[in-house]
Image (cartoon, rainbow, N blue to C red; front, side, top):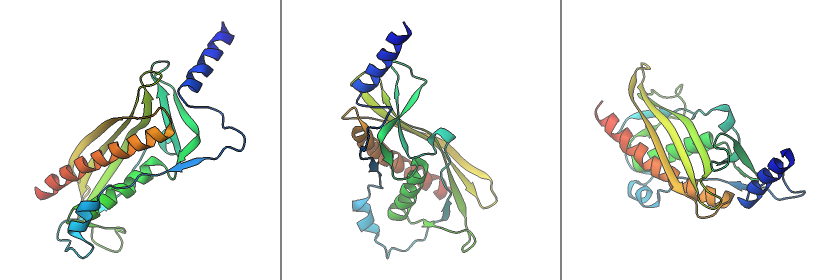
Length: 208
């Protein structure tokens, strides 16, 4: 019986296009995702006057299991509580770092707010804190899968008083049951969340 269970588990992993153990001399694919802002970047331009709030975007925090370059997936039809990592695919940096860069790019490109890189060099009016909670490729069946991103955003003033807080979440179906399909879906979902985050941020800051 134990042998049958082991074989069953291995078959599930292999059929999903994933593997736990890297192949000898296999090339590791490295992925990234960036802010999708071509049109609005051109409208503002680098010479646009930044007359909004001065914001410090702190480094996005994440639970220990997410604070790596691994691309995680779960087979919920088999065991929804266990996570695996793609053996020969990884992020160029941990997702929390990539999200931080994407948020800064979005705010700089699509708003009149000024991103403060170092609080010791300029006065910060507000801080944006992001706590990443979920960033996984989820298989509902052997062939149907989706990515899920969820994070909590907190806006605080320079007295460290909480101004506003909101949880953002998005799902996107993956076109293929592998790391490439996951990365493409993550890119779409993250850009959707960035648009929602910017909209929320503008509303909250306009009320100050």
